[in-house]
Length: 254
Image (cartoon, rainbow, N blue to C red; front, side, top):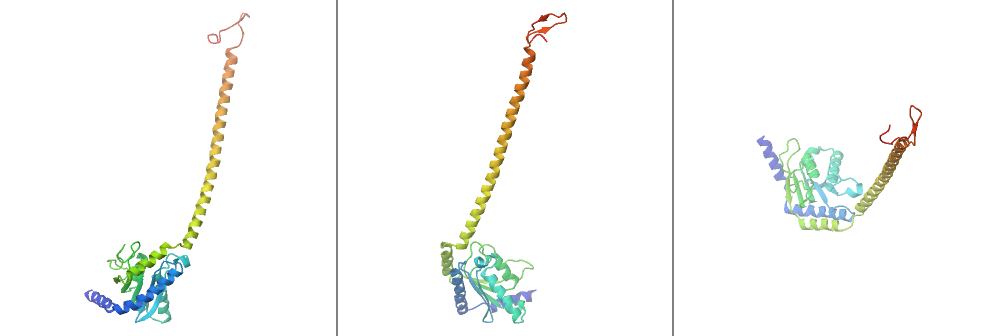
């Protein structure tokens, strides 16, 4: 067990990039992020480098593909898997020697994917305060989680202010995809509201009709019963057994 831990630590130390390498590859990752911004996507870009060769690169494609999982890291991982298949190389062996360079801290989903594929080192720019999976929200990178891949080392802060500025630029501008989605949602809820208002209006009319009908029916029954009583009680004269016609008091004579 101790030998395995030492080998993992040595593996991570072996793939810790130099400042020169970080500067070189992060520059290209920022180019990918700028491309994402120009295409109306959240400006995140990344590279996956294996033996000084880019085997996967990606930028956010969420709006373009209408798929919320198409983060830059996931796009790059798909390219890595495809590259391994075309090169007839073992995915696990390749991933254990890959360094990821990304402009923003990977989210929880992407951090979990990196861990499952045994990526040893992640270099990122700014922190992801809302969804970060490398310590900002959850520390997926170094948490003791059995049967979930291996922990990976994070190197943060490279050109962080620039990464934040790009994110601010994106969120300040209008998102046409977001507007379409908002307009569609507004139309849907408007139609839904009108539908339920019509149903409610119909039910209200029906309830009022039933109430008035019941009220007038009750009045009719009361009036009819009262009329019958009056006709009996106020009969003008009654004949007794002797054949004498006499008037009776409407209350005391029955």
